[in-house]
Image 1: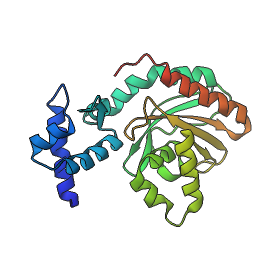
Image 2: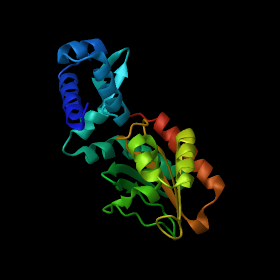
Image 3: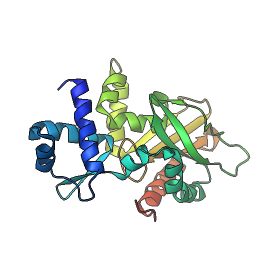
Image 4: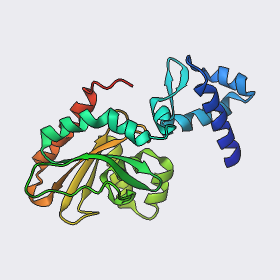
Length: 230
């Protein structure tokens, strides 16, 4: 399939799934689209990987992320979903907590909670951050094979770093974007590329590996125990 055909098939599938409450099996989609199963499977795999479609009990449906992605005020919906979670992380860590999403070739912070410290990291909510030098950005790259290929050409060290990120679910920014700041990021409620990620940032003078371990536990515990129901 060429790129135009692939896009058309993706839109056909999203149109069918968007109009169904019960979902479709692969065969039902193939019959409805008059397409080979192999074609439907390839397109579905891409939509699932991107986080717009989910599979449950052999049925495919549009995901919660699709509903949010298609909403005009999608960032506000993410903020509502995650506010209590990042508040919990902020209470546990006492540091700047950031909620970020991929936006084109960059990362934007859509919400944050500042720490009550004399020396603090300043948030930058209106800035599009470099995806390669941002902890949340590295998580986003690691989830997308196309971005991995783009960013690891002639950079074996970064390829190795992305492998570790995929294994651990944790990404770091050790003064790569801002001198005097260290940040780590973890997944949000799920690992879909369209799902927000959570980061904690420290001034280097206050950072310790113990504090980082506690922040990771706080993020993971808060996302698992969140009362939010999609």
